[in-house]
Length: 311
Image (tube, rainbow, N blue to C red):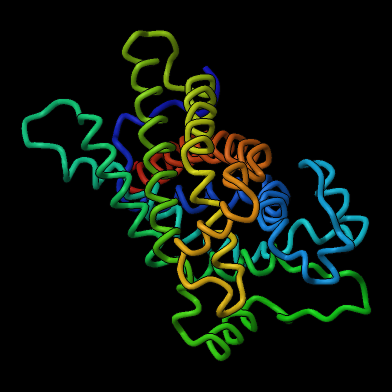
């Protein structure tokens, strides 16, 4: 057996909520440079008017990260990490930690198994709820990741994470912190369905057919499949979301306008810019998150049972 033994008592909603946020933060720490590389590749082509963008060209995942380290310093791939961790603690706790509870809520009474429709509905619901709460953290994260800082001669727009929240609210209004909410809800409803439903189904089938036990290999395979499916279906919406949230006021009238201008200027392949880092990031993120999440749920339940034990 690999990892902790499954608990005899199902994990509580509070355990799932805390475990999901903590596991997501751990996964973000491991994969954040890949996410930053994805953002830089996605916005490449729209900022060619700026001097920094003209001087900096990115090619591939590793090339993007190496170029950033060479031109902006070794800390640059982690630009926006604080906002990223704030996002995961609020975002993942809701969309992942509450998924089982919402799925049970939608499942008809007396039914032993949840249908695919029920799981998709649960994924869409928790994904939309999470975006509504955590959108400002995502806006700030993307702004930091997209900003190019070429040494001491260039100025930073934001001095820190809290300054970014204040500056965006002051210059663009409070609604600026919720910029791109609709494409983000669309994107995360798709991602959440692809991740949670795919992970749920693969894990269930592996266990039902006794191909694997409920431990690390099962969690790894299920998470990898979930990451691949999520990347394929969500990349187009993710590119539009990233560009729209990073754009200055007035550049795009709406997410639809952003999408149409992308197609007109760069062709339909622009929707899959940054696909490789997206897949590497989502695949690695899902594996790290789900494996950690499963172990955290068991560890937290063991702690809870020890605390409640009279002996």
